[in-house]
Image (cartoon, rainbow, N blue to C red; front, side, top):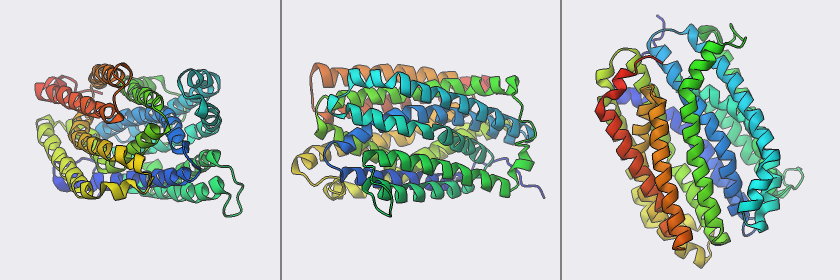
Length: 447
């Protein structure tokens, strides 16, 4: 009997899809924590510099993430409609699109990035930052191909296969970080730049393992992945129509975060180091949240593909229940051990005195995010990506006005600066909920 790709509106189905995604996100976030721990050993300011370079690379990463989310919705819709052979063609065209974007990213980094960072960043970290980025950006093609497999595996309800590539990438990255940053394991001592080389090799191996798994599991034949390798404008146009608003949405979001980090850098290395730790906290404790968000996107699209649009509201409520519940369970106990947790990164008294109240603000924002991002990804799953973009633009305008007013006009503490996350996620939640409850998404049935 052929395995069906049609999903059901049950807690069991939601967990079956979201838990493997959670693991696939957990391991890299653990890797990021280890990486920051290694860089912190190099001395004051290096972890902050990794925050600036990390957010820059994240801008390009989320472009691929937006393409991936659009592809994921399209593939899931085809899966719900049993149009399996169209999945392979969509996947191949997304590969061509992603490689073209990667080439643009490399060109921009070598041509424009030095001027941008020289104008806006602290000169003490300028040279270090640019040298790192000119190495790190060469991992972009591998990262994009790695992300496209997410759209394929999650969109076809094969999220359990995510773990193989994730483990390969993460183990490689941790081992090479330890070797190349400090000169251990017989490898050259490259310091800060060692983390860049380690990440590139890890992304390549993660990508290679994923494509090997896809081949072994027979997915290439089932979905016709390589039956049509020529460029197809019709499929490419479909992907771009669905993905381009998401790409722009995510890029705008992270660019605003880079703006935030640049403003924070004006307050010195201590504020920058604390903010980098908070970014890591967002990533680590948002693991289950992003997994449920990806599940929301895929399942909403799949359910609509089956013609069961009346079940979308029930589905979103069930995903929110699991997302909010798991987030509160994770965050509540660690409130009593905030000092011990933050001491892992820095035991300095000045660091802890400022970092602990910022951590409280961030934890509240993460709880808001657990609901908001599920709703926003449900909007993506309905197929109306333009609404996502409009929601993001309106939210980012408020976000940027807030952080500029708080940090530049009134020169308040970064505690108030991180309050911008409350503004961001409350606005996302309000606008996404209004759209979903309006029922206007039912007019957007074909993608």
